[in-house]
Image 1 (tube, rainbow, N blue to C red):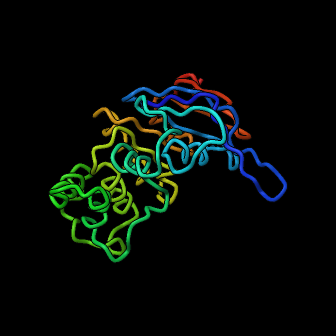
Image 2: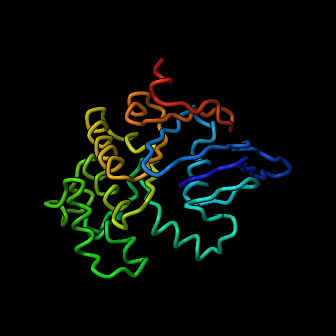
Image 3: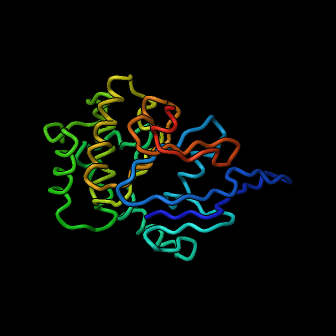
Length: 227
């Protein structure tokens, strides 16, 4: 599903080269649940941006479903992002003036998918929010807003969901409920990759990739990390 070989990202800041990701290599299969952990500045978000086709690597190879991402045009990259990858962010990234259903419909409208209303309602139902479809973000709790964001991420039935600190703005109890939704999606065959700095959140994953100073420090099953 995801195959990364010697992936690196270097940013140019004035006369200096700043390496954000160094020589990352790993493979993720369909149906896995991986957590990426590490301190601030470790390269977690850079790696997620590359996996989500939001940025291009400086060097290395990234293959997504046997597609060499570096060789795609910008239009093809946008199509891959829209149809094959779902994104969930810490700050929800919802349109404040749009209802929950309208927020969920956005990827479908960009992709010109027919039947967007029914598909959005079905996605909201999967996260337990069908009865809140007409509510705007300000009328929802933090946990409900994140559920809307998850519904938007899965409305196109993606093979992969990338989540960047999805529980960072939530209390611990609500965070656990959100993680149970990710776990159910994973049990349905969706590859889940999430960034977190919280050990209790990483415990929902089956595999933990630890990063430091732009490098992958370890890549182990969750049970091995716990030991």
